[in-house]
Amino acid sequence: MGRYTGPVCRLCRREGMKLYLKGERCLGPKCPIVKRQPNKNYPPGQHGQKRTRRPSEYALQLREKQRLKRLYGILERQFRRHFEEAERRPGLTGENLLQILERRLDNVVYRLGFADSRRQARQLVTHGHFLVNGRKTDIPSYLVRPGDIIAVRPQSREREYFKVVQETAQSKPVPAWLTRDLETMSGRVVSLPAADQIDIPAINTQLVVEYYSRR
Image 1: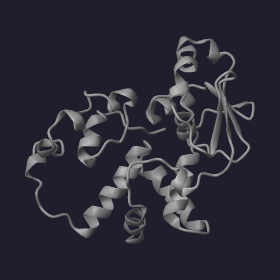
Image 2: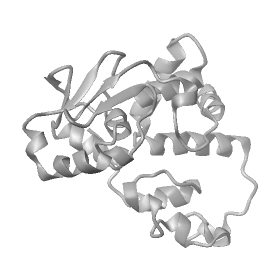
Image 3: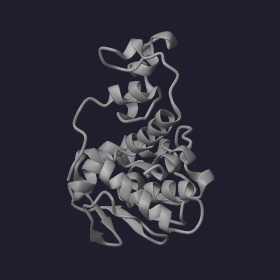
Image 4: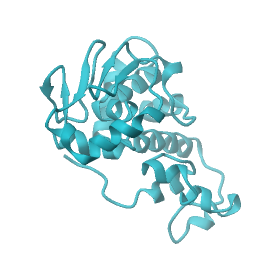
């Protein structure tokens, strides 16, 4: 299973926006996007300050694709598979893609407040700490469906990490398409996420569709 193992703050700098890849750190003053003055918020690398050319249409499409992909912590091959699945479904491809990305198990664990970031949620899932409908599921890309119940394994609830989560997760809001029960450390998928229920930074999904339509 491939995953990005490099420094994640440089990804936010490259995309020029917060991708919330480090949880609480991204909300505080230590975030590089906050620490740097607006006129110094240039991309990382030796030539970051020299990139002043007006981006082409292709460059704009590429950046939107990269932002969305990196926001959910997915590598290219899997992201393309999600896009191809979104294309096959009826409706708007961009909205279908967002819905598929939101239904990933690692994202649902993050949305339920059981992890501070999608990256951390992915690790918790792969380590087998969660049950889906009573069955251990360690596949981060598993797509949940309405009626599914996601719960922390009884053995895992005894760990110090989940005891802290149980006490602190109340302050983390849960989207309308999910419900959460901190007493049982579980959540339920009420419905498929609608476009207006998906809280992410402003990303133009139409540019993502246009990027893959070029091939």
